[in-house]
Image (cartoon, rainbow, N blue to C red; front, side, top):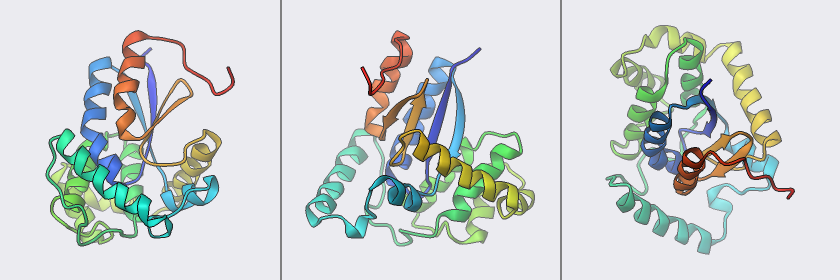
Amino acid sequence: MPRIIDYYFSLVSPWAYIGHAPFMEIAERHGVEINYKPVFLGRVFAETGGLPLPQRHPARQRYRMVELQRWREKRGLSFNLQPKHWPFDVNLADRFAIAITIAGKSPDAFLRRAYAAVWEEERNLADPLVLTEIAEQAGLDSSSLMETATGTTTEALYALNLENAVAGDIFGSPAYVLDGEVFWGQDRLELLDDALTGGRAPYRPNV
């Protein structure tokens, strides 16, 4: 049986965008399964003591901009630090990713196109027309996905992801959970890779 990683993220998160491609490479190299769990970050922050970006101290906001530039270079990306349509109402976009998994397909291609749309092309992911276009570009049936994404099943799963995130000590995006051990942030991907390579037992907060 392949190992499973719970992948908590939101399409509004620049760090999820920065880490997505290298995470997928790690998962493929180790043959792990990915349990995609889009989660609404506003509620995650509210439940775990985090602050939305505008409410953080200016020093933290300034440091964030420096980190974005560092990781943009480190990961070999080219994107706008302050894209035109960010932040945006992420609910429908996140639920589109859930709808794809409900359809039994991988959301990877959709996520790659969606992240690029926000950060590289400055498109508005809150616009249903943009989402349907991205889905079609990813080879998906946008009509059926829109119906599922706006339905009650997807709404319930989005809420369940939030409950699971808070219960599992998730407090930001992205977070990767391997055997109950949380790796928070795309800058922990190398540590996740090490854990998969070495096959060690998971670390726990209570030692």
